[in-house]
Amino acid sequence: METVTYTLVAFVLIGLILAFVKPEIDELQDKALIEQSMNVLRQIDSGINDAYNSGTGNKRLLEVSIKEGKIVFDSINDTIYFLIDSNYMYSEPGQVLKDGAFDVLTARQGSGYEVYAGLNYTKFNLTYSGEEKTKILPSSASFYELFVYNKGGENIDFLIK
Image 1 (cartoon, rainbow, N blue to C red):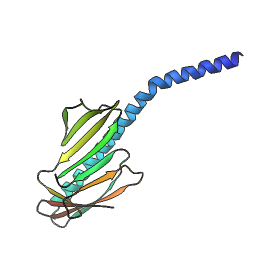
Image 2: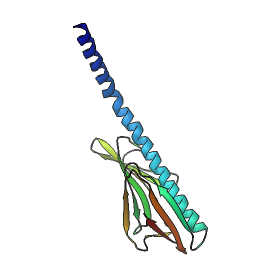
Image 3: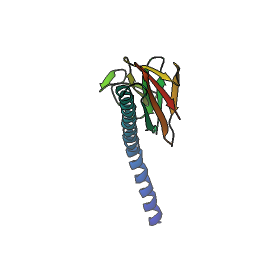
Image 4: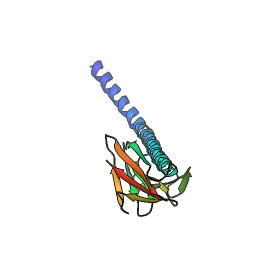
């Protein structure tokens, strides 16, 4: 009888601990995912600038991993950004935060948040496969191969495989 009582008490204690610790763990994981996504955007930005500074005809191959959320190439507005649903409040909701070259916006989404981080390229004309369109890269277990081409002038083209 005592063994059953002690086992039940142990299960109740473990349940209580998990009820308080799990949300904190989820927030820390989401914070790490957001930071990784910001690093992916930095990598893409570096590839764009390298291709541009190396002259017409230059191209760069970037291997991009998206564990959560999605990256959007919006060549219509010459913007690259990522969106992620998160339990972590990255910045003050509704306020645009400057994080280096990035604009970061956190919006309340039910009991969680949606975090947007983006770069607006005013000096480049971004295209996707030679067209002004939007391409969305969802999260994936494998890497995306992103080719960045300098088409001359301020024209930067993307191709994703």
